[in-house]
Length: 521
Image 1 (cartoon, rainbow, N blue to C red):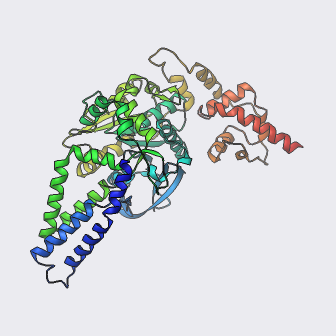
Image 2: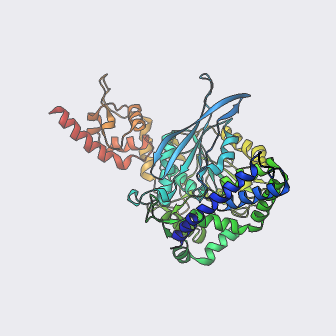
């Protein structure tokens, strides 16, 4: 009943918040003679402090209306370009001249760890002048009805893969903190399947790739308590009347309490200073406090299955560095990463992901050439300083942009990658068949030439605009061409399309046969 008590407490305090808010307005009224006295400022400051510490903070806005590109101020428009149940993909579209060369596309994967994606506002803002930025905007689990189903670690990897496929070839990906593990795993799976949509570069920032390196208090809590403790003590049902009523979640307010408890003295000092600034009339310092805590105190719930799997696989079992992590039952092997360049960033004073935990990704991607890897430790910053603040803007962001521009594309075709990828560490080459099939793609698929009257291939379940374009590039414009594919041609086509459609082709062939027969009839 803890979540219900939290909601009840918030409801009970509503009249108190209304009263202190009205009192604050009274003592800030310029017509009130007490407003400009020590007593008036003290009363107004006290009321604002009480209202803020009892408030529930809503999802903030990014508020990035413009940016500076090549010395010119341009407007920025926020648009949703891809949507699924638990995530929207936001694009910060810049009003650039039509004749300007396209900038590299960057997918920023924000943490699903209690805070909203707006926590990375500074991350986005510093990269907008040089890159076409997209960011994951995760949904608050308490707002998702139980009928919409689960969301776990496998689903997280699926989302990352689907977004990269949606954005197309030569996209770059950046993961901040928690998503470093599922992003690295997703890229490894895409590389294993020779996907042409694997990102050109992957930047991991302050992520728990291997928490056995320089373990922090956060890491030690997980190993000491064990997964059963987390199931009993932090998983709760969403109370009525939220849309996610009865969904099991890890409440955001619990995670916020944990983070604040780690540095409680700092937060108490910050609020004391905020009160003092209000009394002294230091509006600038007070406003900076408001901006920070409006963001920091806005939290979201996580699905229980995703949270528990993350705790268990990442922090307790260390599944990824041990080679035990799976994606829908398929082993995740980062040694397949040979095309996607890797850049890792850490903070010298990071007390959440210790120094060395993110760098461990280089050990796992052992077959990646040296010219495609880089590592940087930023002196004097903690966890949040890795992706926000003055040192991030002046030292880290320029390095990210330079790394991306130094590796503009994968550099090799999927066919070449299939030939060049090494045998995994276990000695078993599970891709022998794919490599053999890939050799056949050096010659065109022997299909008849298409005439002008092409078919709508999107009639096939699983074929969207991008898949249709890929089929057209392979010389397929008609349903009858798919219906009459031989096994050899189907295998060849699967490799040409990145390997991900091999299991779908049999379904496409059957659908095409049915549609062709119907058309003939």
